[in-house]
Image 1 (cartoon, helix red, strand yellow):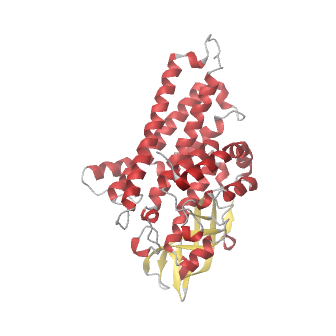
Image 2 (cartoon, rainbow, N blue to C red):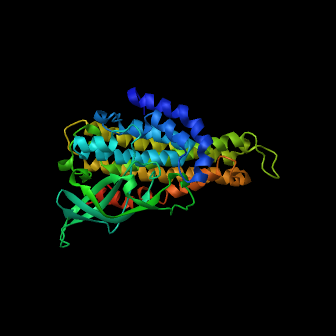
Image 3 (cartoon, one colour):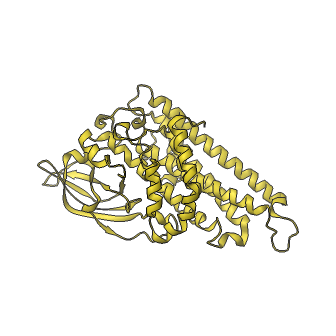
Length: 385
C-alpha cells in the first residue's frame, strides 16, 4: 500500500530507529524488557500514540499505515514491535472513556496502557464504582506501562452477575509476578499482575467494541480491538520473516556449504526457496493491507462498527499472514544451516520470536473455521472478530 501523510512520517521515523532498536535487541532480551534508551526513542517518535485520539495528542493513524510501521519495527526487533502493537490496541480504550478519565490515563506523553486476560476476575459493584479482584496474565509491555487494565465479571454484592467491564487503574496499584521465562518475545516482559479489593471509580470502566459505549465516534474506533490486534501481530510476524529472508540472501551470496563448490545463492534449490518465500510474504502482506483498506473505507462511512464481512476478511488475512511468515522464517533458518544457531547471527533470536508469535491467540488455525462458516452462510461463532 502507499503510505502518505502522517503515516509516511511515522514510517520514516520507524525506519530511522530500526538500526538502534536492532542493536539494542540482545540487551533487551537479556533484561526481559525494553531498555530505557529504546523507550525514550519510541516515545520521542510518537510511536506509542499512533492509535490514540487526536484530542489526546495522538495521531488516529489509518490501520494500514499503522501495520506498516509495526512491520518495520518488527524487522529490527519483534519484542519492541509487539509492545507497540499491544499498546496500540489498548489505546482504543480512550474512545470509550469520558474525556476527563481519558485525559488522566493517556494525558502524559509517556502514557502506556497494558492489559491481559484474567479468567475469574471479579468487579463487585459498590457506590461510585467497583471493588476489583483478580489476576491477569500475558501483560505485554507491563514493565513500562503507566496504567493497567483488568477485564472482569461485574457482580452485585450478593454475587448476581451484571455483565463485564474492563477497569483501568494505575500500575502502582498492582502486584506483579515475574513469570515471563519463555522461548521468544522475551523483551515484552509479559508478566502477570494482581489486585485484591481495589476500588476503581466507575469513570474508569469500559466495555470495548460496543458502539453504544463509545464516547468518541471517529472512523478508527469503528474497528474492533481484535481486528487491530490481528493486524498488529500479523505485521510482527511478517517483519520478522522479512528480516530473516533478507539475512539469508546476504548470507547466500558468500556462504559455501560444507562439501559444496558453489555459494548458496548459486544453488537452484535455494533460488527456488527464496522465490517462493518472496511470493508468500508479498501475497500475505497484500491480502492483509487490502482487507484493512476496505475496512477503512467502510469505517469512514456511516457504519457504527466495521461490518462482519470486513472483520472476517481481516481475521482471515492476519491468520494467513502469520502462517506464511512462519513458513518463510523456517525456510530461512533451515537453509542458513549451522550459521543460524549462533546467537550473534541474525536468525536465532528471530526464529524463537516468530515461534512465540505462533502461540498467541491471533495465530490460531481455528480462525479459518470461523471464516469457512461465514463463507458458507453460517454464524462464525467466534469471539475474536
